[in-house]
Length: 142
Image (cartoon, rainbow, N blue to C red; front, side):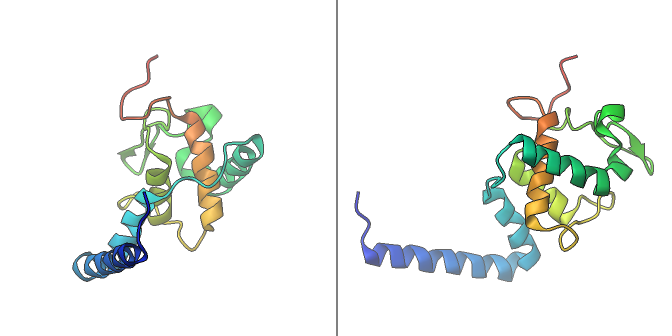
């Protein structure tokens, strides 16, 4: 199927218009947050990428989430809030990246501006090694 140049121009105009309306009604931060849901993890799950994620996790995340070998990465209670183990909380890579970037409620800080986007995706690659195949929110099978 061949798409005409005119149709592509209208499509581009529609996308720009949709973004402008989104920013006007919901704010730039909300549109930026939602844009993460359209992203795919650019970091391949290689041993090197996971090792980099381990380093970043130890330096930035372990203080709250614990050491994975000791606590299954999460499943702890911090400041009165129970945190599910990463193996219990299956989310797509895009959602994990969004949560790391923008934080979660009052419990998890935003890492945007602290970590680079590449570092965030390496963390996502590592955290996904704990998740069950198939995704979804459900308890572990054991």
